[in-house]
Image (spheres, helix red, strand yellow):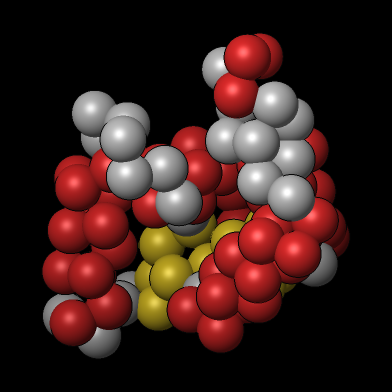
Amino acid sequence: MSTLVDTNVLLRQFEPAHDHHRTAVAATSRLIESGETLHIAAQSIAEFWAVATRPPAQNELGLDVRAAASAVEAIERTFVLLLSNEAMVYQH
């Protein structure tokens, strides 16, 4: 079985102070450990980047470009990236 992971789950994993951080990390870990294939849409990478690099004063993560790039690399190592047309088929 496979699961499409939402951008909000990705964001919570990189925001340790957020109330849902532990839940996002634990849920993702459980799915991976159970053999689940976790997918992300290419659009989720763009959404993650936009939120991750905005300042904390705007309720965002405030990562610098290097930290955001490192986070994206970690995401791409963990999840299977779907191109836009693949994600559309997945959601139906």
